[in-house]
Image (cartoon, rainbow, N blue to C red; front, side, top):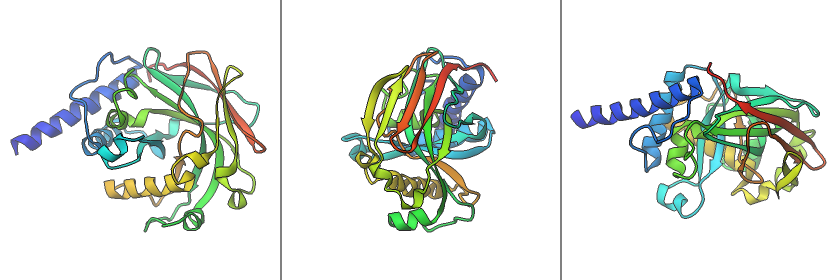
Length: 271
């Protein structure tokens, strides 16, 4: 009993610290407690922080865990919540401001955004056709990765998970026309910062692709006890990489032949 209380107390303290830092837009110069070295305690912190934060979660980001840590941690992807008030819709040509933590970590990522239709309750599909059948929308998008803790990525995936998976927002662009008949892994994607190309790739390099990210995420959430029946957005992973970005810079995700999405990063303010 005493050990359980100590663990719960430690989890709560870290979660409280991250939520407060994000609310107040304050930098954390050091990890606020004992950093997790496994995914179970990391998700325990994340789950507690979601409860403390109290905002509505409308979707989830998925990120990759690279070798050899995938073998050590027992997973090749990670997840973090996307809160409704951090999502901005942007049609082509619009450049919305997206807040990041000044002095913390900030990056832009070109991503495909897939929406699981309301009514899904399991089981998790086993293949791409089954996964496509539970979706009702696919958008071009950008994930804004940012944390008040500068070491969020360099300290490893468990630390990344513990602070909302390093998510700070999502730019939701236009619907991918005819997406049910499009090979998502064949779209050439380019990322630019202030007009300079910083990455180019396709989703074919991303494990089992965007549909695989959906399957991972649904399995992860069901295992953690989340209700997935109301519909949810999934930011399926950084196609061209995680591109660090500075205040005032613009990020553009170009999906060749399909459209683009843009934003500019600004300093987060207390909320």
